[in-house]
Length: 257
Length: 222
Image (tube, rainbow over the protein chains, first blue to last red):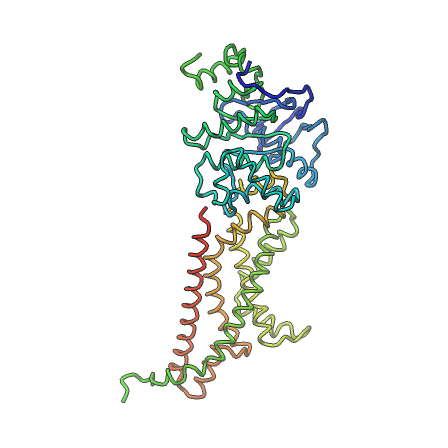
């Protein structure tokens, strides 16, 4: 059981990935991936670097085009094609390892950009909502500064607010704390934990085992392009079935095991 | 009695007789660069397009312009096209300078667009922005900033290159120098005046570009 009280999860499948295959040239990075995520579920993907976990996340958002396989969101298959993808991407909030804030815009302009330019929300209304979101990530007083003036942790919290501004159904986190100084990891994880509590569906690639243990409903271990094992965090961290999983966990959790 | 074989004392008195010619120099440079900026941006975006035919056309344009002298391009516009359409000297110069600089400016823009981190485009696309909008809102504002120093350089090159327009009878500085020289036989004195005019104009342009760079640096550091 997770220690976090969470909003009730429905049994409704919000994201379904079927037989996903992704190659970079001759290299098969994802080999027949199948995954279902329920609404409100927090799924954490762990695995060594090069195991394909980031690629999987990027395929869900179509930043990478998979060679084979199908992706369903709310039961509807996502088809290729600009118009469709632009629509679907609004449902999927993406948070990147390197934040990718827009450096020529202030913090609040970053958060408003998607609302104003994509959702066509009037400027005034967008500003109010953006300000509210900045409040939620604890950065309202930074609204009018440029990203260059922020710490890594603050940048990532702005990036989360920017993604939330589109009111996505699923949030995708691609190693959101990997580029941060250790003392800044906590503030980002705490924002993510809040989100999980509010019932946001989350797909998180991370090396923060604490987060996986405490917040995840399900942990997925990826190895060489396949989902080798998936289980609740309790089971995954106490009694993994696969040898590769054990070896990996032993490395990332040295003091336990 | 002069130590030098030239009478340099005429320089101050004749100097301002070149002012009108300098105006023509500035005029064809300014409009040439303006046309060049428009063509350059279009050609840069075209080259980066995923549409193969468009990319090929832009590549061919850049290849042809950069591979041939500006003088040849000037003559093609002014003399070569006469069988179809007669274009007056000044418009000819502006067209040739525009197309010539457009090719170089296209490469400047292409470089600065490609220098923007790929994560910027990905972040914009992940918000559901169409590619064109992401280019306009996110990539180009950052790319323009990076293009300012090389564009300043190109502007100075264009100003000096405009002297070639003297060969198609544009009454600019260089032509004025040749006319004044041959009527007075004081070639050295007249061409020194021409050189000083160019030097003053390029200095002012360098200074202005430097100021613009400084200002951009303050408003945003990335």
